[in-house]
Length: 95
Image (cartoon, rainbow, N blue to C red; front, top):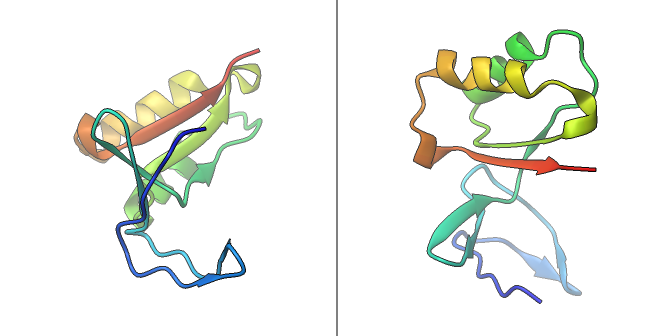
């Protein structure tokens, strides 16, 4: 089981998160911070504009899957965003 700590003022109630904020992260090993609030990308013919808008809105975690075949679109949105690689967390399900 991976241990993590929250680095923002998140209210906990019965072990559940009562509130998440853009800045809520899990500090994971080895010293990386993963945003707990992620933007989910599903099957989308052209995900680039949607993911780019999510980055503009403040998202820094994108969640997708290899089966959705939108890796190139997510990458294009990242490049167009001008964000630094160390500021974005990408999680992908690989089957």
